Length: 456
Ligand code: NDP
Image 1 (cartoon, rainbow, N blue to C red):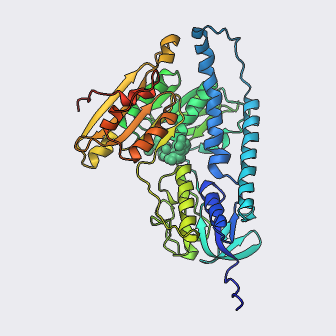
Image 2: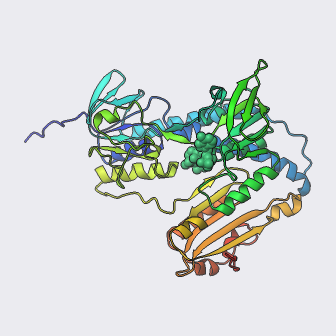
Image 3: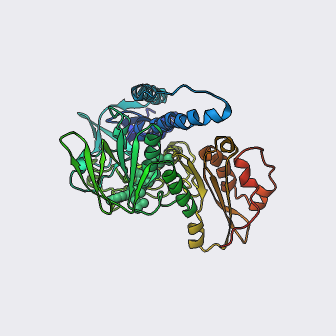
């Protein structure tokens, strides 16, 4: 018997070539599905092209400045170092281009049809991509998010994080607006690269959503580093002077002069002008695609993964969502994505690492908690004389002894926290940490040496 021809051109059409979309396409292709993917910009999306990867490379560049200074305490005589911004921009851009080519190769290897065009839904099975119209049994929206810039007169003179990787020249003075991940990461990068940074944030402490002690510790570190903090302030206007300089008016302080203003005031789902409403896909007031735990939208054959769903907006989460979706649809392994105890890191200077509940979240969930903290000068800085202190915190359920959250501000916090994230996810108890032998001398060992409960 001849098999009937497929009803649609593709089994799966993915709109968006970032981390979540590429993973969904690749895995679906490896399961034998006929897959197409469309991306109007560069494959790799925010993380690879204008986010995590170039940001981390810039953070590495910034980290040298402190090391050059600290080297003297260890006997090194370092000639006054000179930093060339153009070299960093060029080398980072080359690296990103290489990663982009790997993404394309992976898609190609999985047999996916690649469209370098913007795609829009015509109806729930039809996609307009460039000048072609194709149909698919299932469609995945993986269009990510874009920077949100609050309204203020002259705010069009501000840049967003996408632009920060291509500034020419490196600004001598920069105002950074916001107190979230992106604001504190870029404030640290530009400060370490020698710019005079003013961080303007509407709150008292940076990093809302993180543990209160972490927020206080990092805010203190940023202030002590020598950058200027203008907390509990908003930007009320930006005026371009005839000299090209920008005058930034603040709600509670004197205006600040700068060569650049970077707005890092959050991101919004990239869901407009995609034909989603036309296809009947429900959107939240934020613009996020409303999905269930299997990433299925209100239209049964349309799914969404990653930041456009505004669940936990992190690359590894988008990747897990894309992978789980492809396995669910084509791999015979249906499963939701677990969004509990997702670890994350902020690559500020010093960096932050965290997993699980903050102390406030544990209280809100009705736990009776024990809190353990440690504040200590890392061995490295006992020689340099820098007044740097690392901070660590454990939030423990008093009843079961389970570690609900682990938090750190200090060198290597992101690296250290990955291992503790496994322990927290496995339900480790404080007694398990106590029973673990320390690795000495490290900073990480503090996590298994905390004995004194903090008074609450
Ligand atoms: P965040 O949501 O983390 O922070 C936004 C900041 O802007 C907050 O401090 C917020 O203040 C402030 N803000 C929002 N609206 C206004 C306004 N109208 N006026 C003044 N300030 C305002 O967003 P980011 O842009 O920093 O990052 C976006 C997302 O990207 C993050 O949520 C994160 O998931 C992801 N990301 C992750 C990274 C990592 O894993 N290392 C790195 C970079 C980004 P308030 O706190 O008062 O609301």
